[in-house]
Image (cartoon, rainbow, N blue to C red; front, side):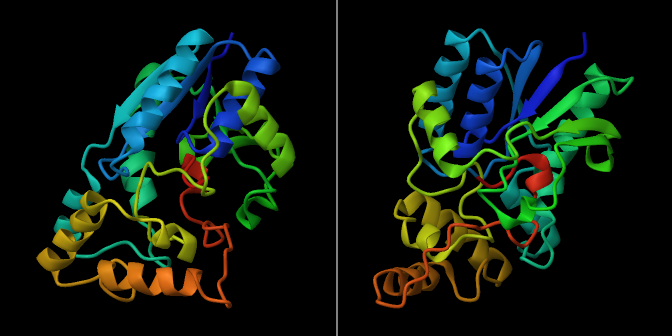
Length: 248
């Protein structure tokens, strides 16, 4: 029987995907998570919560590490990724996933599950449930089993799982992300996460956003608290690394 590998980032949609698989008795399931070296300082708590959840349900977890971290990549390129040039997902997640898959699944027999919900992002509106051969995963088959799940159905799956529902609609496996919304940036409070960006900005003399990180956060806070705030939760309309399970 072919293996099913669910590429997950432990955001809300990922948890809904895992719970859907449990409810629908998807067999030979392994959850795959990539440590990109750029997670929010609080994300280790989420990882431990999901580990316990998977253990309770006898689901295997494989944690991969990027060959290079986000800071190392930025220093080497002397550039931050941008919404136009989003090199980070393929480098930090795509490469380690493909290398691992080629090692354990050399005949490309595995099925890759991705938590793509049309209700979460317009980037998924034209997705099909199955892709027979995906170039992003070495021509392996892709399955989007929760593609048609509504936001309320997703939240119910998360409640059933016992995992916390995140207050913002994305994973913090990479944080801050170049596709952060105003709400995302306004919620960035931990000095560790702010200073790691400021350090990189100083090292290469460039900024992750239009302004330096502290100014960007202040501007986002002002906009978020204003009467004209825009709480658009869809961070991934630009086609960020959704094919590798980034985003929500």
